[in-house]
Image 1 (tube, one colour):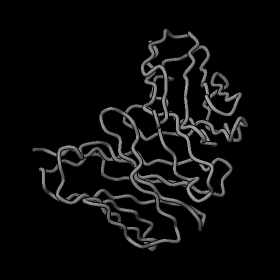
Image 2 (cartoon, chains in turn brown, yellow):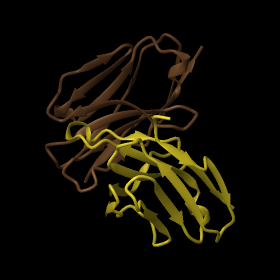
Image 3 (spheres, chains in turn cyan, red):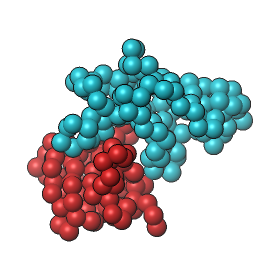
Length: 116
Length: 116
């Protein structure tokens, strides 16, 4: 069965600290996509990144970086030098393109609070 | 606007009332998805359209839930005889037709439904 686990329910750090959000996934398929979405207080889900299961190269985008480890089925997200505007709920997600719907399976989210 | 839009943004219904939630996808997006997000949880898949065809409705929780997309653009999610457990945020997402990026879904702001 497909499953995404975000064990950290809430994280609170002081501004400028680095923070890593953990994500572990389960899937039977060899081809799949992994995502991170940000949900600020306004409620809209903001797409951050999509990774193909065949591409394990880590990615950096500004203060954001992602570490994809297929051997441990993890796709962790690090924010460097956090800012108050980073406060939001972050969701890790999985989709299997072979399924008829290509629906996304979301984790339960990690609420990140950045204190000034 | 360029993004997915949903209306109404907020809806309060009395138990037993029927409601209709609207989604306007990004222009040209072939695929459209509906998700339900309960408080403090990640979104859960409800149903999926490719153009006007509803290809997967396995996530609809009961036969009180009905979705349509008659012209392959705007979609409506209808809930009949609402119950208190239907209270949630209903998110709509769309994705473009190009195969290379078909797994990236872009979400609307959601409709927050409260059933009293």
